[in-house]
Length: 252
Image 1 (cartoon, helix red, strand yellow):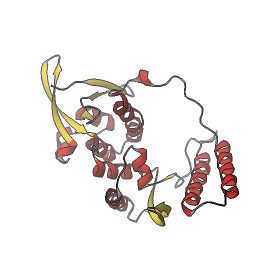
Image 2: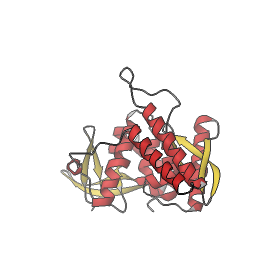
Image 3: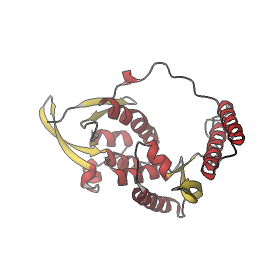
């Protein structure tokens, strides 16, 4: 018999039946939120490690329910073409999973009532400028640091440019922050080795090609002691990258 916790996303219930070590959700709840019909047919195409069956107590007695593990959840999100999918993805990976892994549970009450204001773009750039002045005083900086600083400045400026104006709530097309494989994996809480990074990169590249008919954009990054060109993924395609990461890393 599995323990049951009920979360709420945009007034819809999400039943959680897993643990901090192995998160697991009731599949029918996820499919309903993501606008996916035929739950059984959908899950029939999933790998065994992506799904399961649990027994829970209900008012009518014990009931067996199809479930999805963390990799399965992400695959389901990836399949959805509804606008809600990205909101749900952000809620799961930025609120629910971090809370479950830290405390073993998730509750709206756990949110801090007061969140410190983030630094403005001007303040962040000023901090970087002061850091660069310090590097000059100390004799300069290496290639790795130069690339990191360049990435920081670029992302700060781009993030500022993407802030919605008073007349428009949508950013201009094709202007997004970019995520290399290694940075995104770390942001999701993983520490992949070189072999795993290569596997993630290969899967993400194939998914990108299937979607766009071309290879991902590349930019310079400091990797393993050398500077090289690596694939990067925009916010529009970060779900492809996240899916590849989950496929390779699983519950590790």
